[in-house]
Length: 313
Image 1: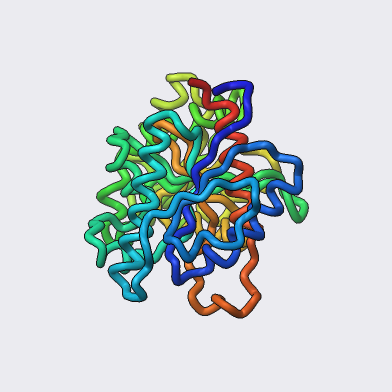
Image 2: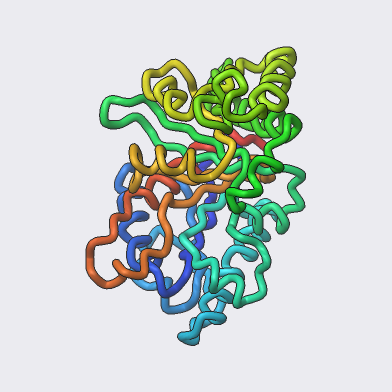
């Protein structure tokens, strides 16, 4: 559907969280820009109230007040949104914040929506990219997590040269197509303190990272590193890199959320369609207080529409 208005499926998320509360404001802000995407919102019946008139609502059940029920309606919304995308009825997905224990109570065995979406679409590989536009004196922030929701003690065995090549190549292809960056510059963060400092604190940089980066450069991808975690993000902040790839979840998320929390967007690479999500969780402690900020949800909708415009058929 290149050239026409984009069609987005938006899931509300856990009915007990801030998704139902902030989504109406997020979508009003989106439409206030003059944006013309066609949006269908999926959630339980009660969560679909108060939405802008431009939206179409698709109920996926009723929340019965318990943990399993919350997980079930969250899951059904995701499943139906994926079905719409796979049938070509929408061009991209925006998923609201879910509660992982509720999804597990509903029978989901995955640790997060990224892994669930990979299964639902049978995608061979996926990547978790955090994105935020320029702000506070920095350029765009893009951080790819080479591994996602795993215990820290498993990370060293999961980070292989093959994984790094796969994830960096996936990122590079999406930056070219979705972000229109002709030759992306990708900085790779090492695993050990000071990127092992010549082998003093481990050998993964030499045995895993260096061969992976050499392979990537041989294939024409502008990848550099391995860089120490305490300086690699400065390259991106200063505009010397278009993205940073990190070996595990928290080394990337701690920096990203410090710089961009509340306006960042979680993007899944490798699916048959663009998928974005706010950078926050359900925030049960903020429900009903009036303190929840819809900005990240609005940014997720904006980015999904932008990526859909470049996705092609």
